[in-house]
Image (cartoon, rainbow, N blue to C red; front, side):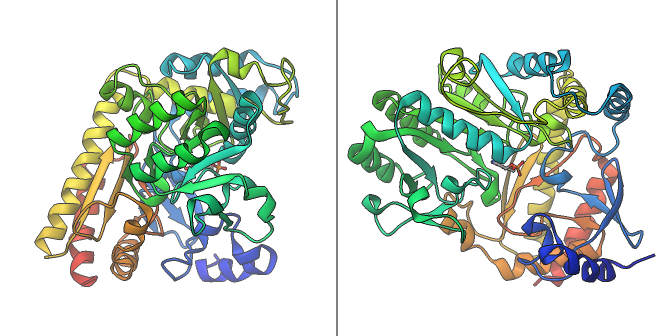
Length: 431
Ligand SMILES: *Cc1c(COP(=O)(O)O)cnc(C)c1O
């Protein structure tokens, strides 16, 4: 048996940084990443046989927990019928119908293989459909790693953003405007200056890539008004929130609070694949029919709508659409956050937290952050100590303070109590 440290050493020889996606490397919190050998229900088991309660859930998809029998059976059945055809299948229609049934803002969607691909395609579609180039995003929101979206704010509104990655030409991001999340004044200014040139505004409605920050209702309302008035498309990136905060995604929450509210385009991933590579973007028919083969906006994928991935996603969505599923998941998640806050209070540590459906966040701070700068100003040293103390006690939290957490339907009362007992100890130690 190899230890995690041995595997990490070996991995670093053949894979840059030893990982195939950077946050897995534990750079933010330090230490050795755990190499996962298998998973079951709410648990992960690492290469050394140590068991962890899993609050990452593969970064969101595993909403039913690991190895759910209905999902496994659907995948096995699909495998028996062939792995990939490169031709349309009935299951793609079924999955599209199942997703559209829950998301009334969309009349059509297209399936792709990753959230990055879906966001990138939605962007191209928005630009193609409006005939405009400029796009707006918000600091702290992540929409995958497409060039035009790897941008941080420039020094002023008129100057546009700077690439956040080497290899992204300045020219590629020169049409990307980066604004502060929840900042109404900047939003108004941006539309005053550039309204007629903006193809779309892309937003994480609950930003899970800065842990857990909600777009305030007045902000979202204003954003919708401005987009409509200036002919820009409002694109909801629900790769994380979709079928995670509730069946209709975060847009259902905003529609409940703001009657008639709907985004123009939506991007989904993570839960809709149930753990397999699958994502989607969709919207009204008139916009979606701008895509090839009907329209001039090119988009394609060899493995798009893969028969095994669609089987996995479909089985997952059918389970979470059962009556009462989200009520129970949301209650469990609220109970977790309330327990963490109580533990922190007991330890005299400033903590705040929030949750929606099966997604949660907590911060070592006096008040819930409203924007990226406030997230990054929370107590990172304490977070890192807490993270490792929890990991030592068999609780696997996201290894960075700017990442959301996820509860699955497999997390029961005993996992919850074990987590909170670990938290009480860890908060004392992390002091
Ligand atoms: C995870 C994520 C993406 C990227 O999805 P990948 O499948 O990792 O490419 C895009 N947007 C949001 C909001 C995400 O959370």
